[in-house]
Image (cartoon, rainbow over all chains, first blue to last red; front, side, top):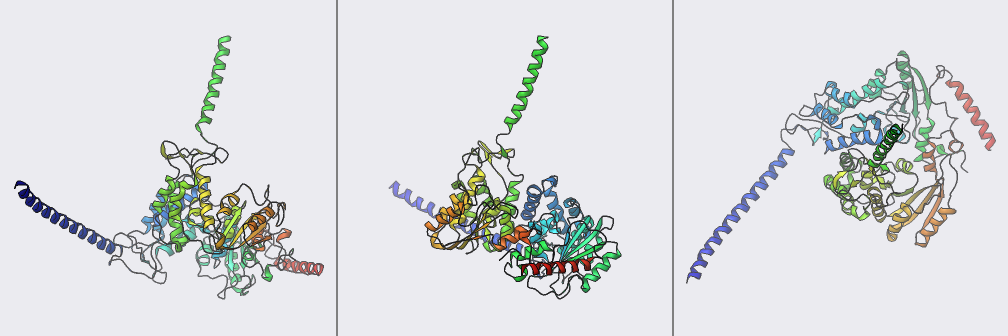
Length: 304
Length: 316
């Protein structure tokens, strides 16, 4: 009967169709698997150099851009002319596709120019071995600015980056430590930015040092000692005021009359800066007391 | 003569209409959307999950931005409700460590400093959702997919605006996920009282606290260093708050002028009598310094020591 003959042909056609569908599915699966495997391989390219420190911060572009706009729009609207996209591009071009042990200050020149902004006199606050305390202070008291409170430092703080000659040019797996090579993107960046920060300072400048560390409050090898004090301009900077802080309940390894402070004073006086030094600058000590309210060094005169 | 009078009247009315239409161009009284809002929000999102608090794990920041935007875009900016942010909240939610919640009223900057970006306490602005919106402004417009950068409605113009509804939703969720010992920092110098009603804490946070998750509520009432002592524990609005919480079944304690917070306020008034440390010498002069200051350091030390002895003698 015609209907039954038709059904046999239909069955053949169905088998053929099913076969084609299965074949297509297998092909798609193969393509997907292949792309996943190669994609994974690309992210960890065997050609990329391997280092000991953490790699480039993921989503670096979004973080840098967001911070740039945030700083300009929400914190210092008078800098409204900053082109954040250009700033990001100039940062990227400083290190992308380059060997991360061959970075120079010149690589960062375009970025430094685009991101620099004037700093009011008497506001520059340098620091050495007091990172946590000094930044808590500038967060609560906007009369002072550390490098990390300028646009450049704000964008780069706690973020890392480095490039690699092979694609995609940015190494998200690892970046060189200073001990592996000195001319790495991070060290060169902070050295260049610190130099610029020191050059821009005017009026009275402040520096917060740590009098509780054994190695001494001032070290010639620190960024402050090796770059910043050497780039202060005696025609713009009138005085350097040292705040020598001791940990609450911590050792008084050094005070204003200590050896390394004397050494620092000599270096600065030779360049005609006036220097003063204060042990435990009161406003900063009050900030330390926030975390140690019951310590005897934090007793208030008014408390019973 | 009549014609020249008529022309000048016409000119004046034209000018008036022109300036009037300029005012009309600005729809609302509040400032407009923050410029580059999308880049700032997405950037803050990645900043938070990669650097500020990586413990929250992976989040899809583009998705979070889309959910945030869709809460208020293409709608009349006076019709935005807290639940419009539900998807955004669900995508950006993360657990709040126990004993770290810090609620507050009338001391935004102080709380930001005191919480230390989540290290001591985790205020709403230290959670991802709060971190994204803190100090920003935004609104959309009906029949347009764009943001209004010119102006946005204030609370007075309409309650259901994009920003206030955001903070309501964020506050509700923050309260719901708080546990352990929770702290409330109130301003004892605030006009109208330390515990404002209506207010975010009163209307959106207290009703959403989970009693079975909270072991204790500690209230701190702190006066501005040079401010009046309008409110304190046990009186006026603080008494109302304490009673309300006790009635709800919470274990409540209240402290006036907690020392930690006082020290933070003292940063701006280091020489104020409320801020003088009994252990230190009088503060050396700050600001521009005279050239012989370095040389007279020893003299200052002697005078300070003498002053300290004198003060000790007075005290004892």
